Image: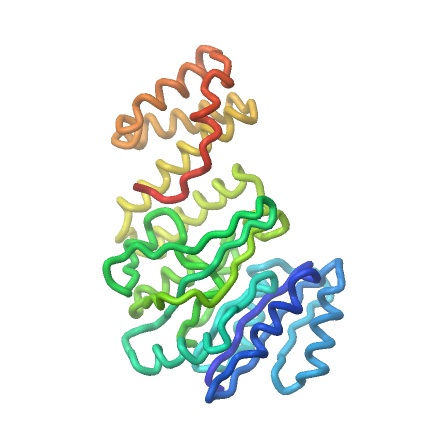
Length: 317
């Protein structure tokens, strides 16, 4: 088997048909399979998935647990079913827009033995606001170095990824808050990550997504846990860059906690930033002075609504 399309779906009734049709439309000179874990949805997603399996029995391998097991356990279970030389990633709420996507990515990995992974441009659609924009790749070459992955944000949209099937998910993976970034970071130590400058996917942003459905506060805490863990797994080789990420996340947590009237939490993160990340603290001295006035002197937060309402800046400058 050349390619395994590695998928999970949960409460994706609204999206799953478009997603699966975009896979089945692929034109390839090789065989591909669809590995799909359906995580005991409360809507009709499972029925739809089973109908597709019945219609295309040779294409689908389904994993259907009898209870909801969560994203990370689902990844652990379904990865073992992927028999392809390459694995293409896709979630049940996203879809592909180019019927040559799998062929183009497999050709790249065939030709470049040093490449362990490739990804491409995508459209991002925010279903809450109607905003539609393209992902951005800012490197001077078509290779993404591991250092750029550690700029504090993820420039890779999941439905754009194809990787070599040369890895196993270790037990610690299951304890992480999300699975995409740790996979990319671990693979980046084994080979090149290459970029294709062609838009071939749509990534949906909506309130029921695994990441978008969480509060900013919880996502920031998840990020802190993740980067603490991955720093150890990377043998602290990128400690300075990960420190920069921690400083940015504490900065954003201060804002989020002020807006939520969590005074004690605001103080905790302010003091962590002040004592542990002096360079970042001093670089943002004006903002820190404002935070201090709000937290310690009781200055009304709405006086500084422009600062506090700025979108979270996931990228570290």
